[in-house]
Length: 270
Image 1 (tube, rainbow, N blue to C red):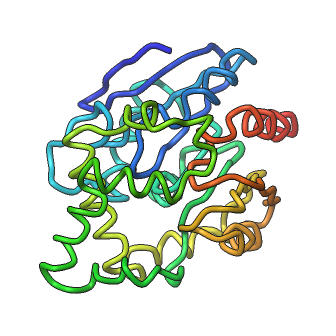
Image 2 (image 1 turned 45 degrees about the vertical axis):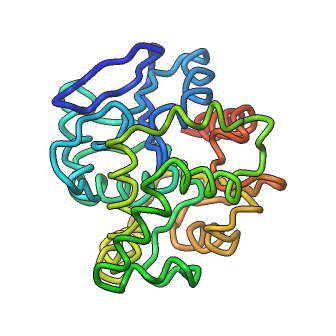
């Protein structure tokens, strides 16, 4: 894969064919989709995998790139690449970002949609320790320690990733940059501090999505239970759900071969 840059947004690109835009989560970077992307490129698709702004090698020119900011940056990238239609593959924070992109830029034709282990709802259950986000000052300090340091991310890795033989810590660390750690802390904190306010427009958009949609969900994700995946599939009219046993939160990295096969089956339908 070759790395490129557009207005501070770094992205990986490979292949030649119909475009697929793949969005990672937090903590994360474009590398989250790299193995799947390379396999899809080998099958005749153009794969675009950005580092979301403030993460990976993309610039951090503001303290907080949130859903709409990320969507505007992605729209600028797609315009520069002359991409007016694509397939979207979304993981974790890439989920609400991708839905926001479709909401703000309805002229973008999304031919098919892949969603894996994300939050798209205002009332998703939040584990008790994470609820401190609502506490002024203390909440931000907690997130700076919990997901804004390598030690904190390593604890998350140990808890949320099940296929450690596939994704050892030495590999997972490639996601972590100083700017990325700050952006991860800021985004986690803002998301959980006001779920109802931040996610209302995302949740309301789901029933309007008419494209073929595949929801791929890990069965052993401590962050987003399988019930959340079922709910996503129920809210999107043309969605189907497949679950992966013995798989944690980081599905594209933990199950790249299976995810690739499942995406290719979806693409055969369009």
